Each structure stands twice: as C-alpha cells, then as structure tokens.
Amino acid sequence: MERTFAIIKPDAVKAGHAGDIIRLIELNGFDILRMEKRQITREMAEQFYGIHQSKPFFGELVEYMTSGPVVVMALQRDGAISSWRELMGATDPKKASLGTIRRMFGTHIGSNATHGSDAPETAAFELGLFFPNL
Image (cartoon, rainbow, N blue to C red):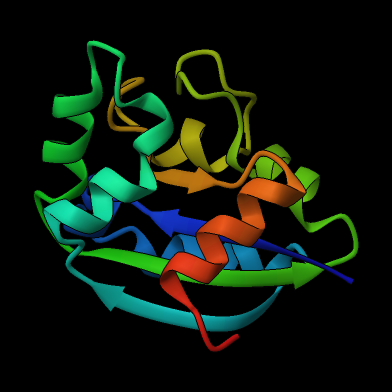
C-alpha cells in the first residue's frame, strides 16, 4: 500500500465542493487515513511550496493557498500517487479529461481545486509536514 498527500484547495472548499471530492476519493478506492480542515499559515505555505520560491508565481501561490480554509488528507491505496494524480486530472482544468476532479471543480490553472504529491519523496515530505505523527 502506498500513501500520498492531497489538498482540497481554497477555491473548491469555498464553492462547497469538498464533500463531492471526498466522495470521489472514496469511490475510487482510497482509504482516508487522516483528514483535517484547516487554514494554512503563510509560513506553512512558504515551506510547502519552497521548491517554487524562485519562480515569479510563488507569492501569488502563497497568497492563494492562505486565502481560505483547505482540506488536507493522507490517502492510501495501491499506486496511490499515480491513481490520485489521474483522478485529479491535468493541472489546467480546460485540458483535464472528463470525469476528473479538476475538470469538474477547477475554474482555471491557478484555481484547480486539488493538489497531490507527484513522487514518493514529495509525498513523504508533504505528509510529514501536515501529519507528522502518521
């Protein structure tokens, strides 16, 4: 069994889509090991997105992720990382396949409803940051 980290982003929470997204997660065979609705602090967002610190969109990304509550989750299943990324869909909701979360609930590339770890090392870092006792 593999674990991954997921976020339902502020745009999707504000629009009332968190429950629908959680239902899709469960329908697609994921076990939700931990789940918490929380407000991410600026410091946490800067640490979380530290890899993008030198990029021009870093400040905007931090502002967006701290703009409202999010739902953070630790997910588990066989092939969790690739399965979650497939269920989320392409980063740009307009390019995401039908039936994916971002296609259904994302509004544009910057407000695309969800985040998911892209590799085992990333998942370990992100899970450790948000769920250190997991």
